[in-house]
Image (spheres, rainbow, N blue to C red):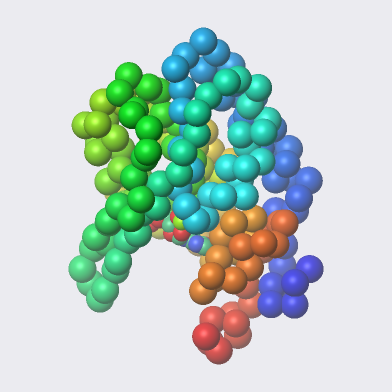
Length: 179
Ligand code: IMP
Ligand code: MG
C-alpha cells in the first residue's frame, strides 16, 4: 500500500470483478443498438480503459473534459473544455464517470447532450457518494456506494497525484493538511 494512504478501500480484484459485471450488463443492454461510450476526463480514464475492453460489441468512443469551479458559497459553475468530436444524433450514449459526488457535473451534461440529439443517455459511475448529493441524478450502472471519505487511485486524484495507483484508497488526513 502507498505510504500516504490510511487504508485500501477497494483492491484490484474487487475492482476488476465489478468492471466485468458492469461490462456484461452494458453488453446485454446495447446489443444491436447504435451506442457510443463517452469517458469524462481525467478521473475516468483507468476505469474507462478497463471497461471498454470487457464490452464485446463494436462501438465508437470519445472523451469529454468538463470542469467545475466552486468558490465560497456559490454553486458549481460547469464548463465544457472539450466536447465530443463525433455527431451524436440518434446515438445511445453511455457516459462514464469515476465518481458521482454532488451530481452537478452530470446533471448539467445530460440535458446538453439530449439537446444535441442523443437518442438516450445512460450514466455509468464506478463510485457513488450518495451522502454528498445536491441534485437528483439517476445512475444506470453503478459500481460501489462509498461513505463520504476522500478516495484516490484507479484514476482518481488528489492534487493530480495518485491517479496511477491500481487500487482505491483513503488518504491519511496529514496529507491534506500539508498540502
Ligand atoms: P460532482 O458529482 O459534479 O460533484 O463531481 C464529481 C467529481 O468530483 C468527480 O469526477 C471527481 O473529479 C471529484 N471528486 C469527488 N469526490 C472525490 C474523491 O473522493 N476523490 C477524488 N475526486 C473526487
Ligand atoms: Mg472527475
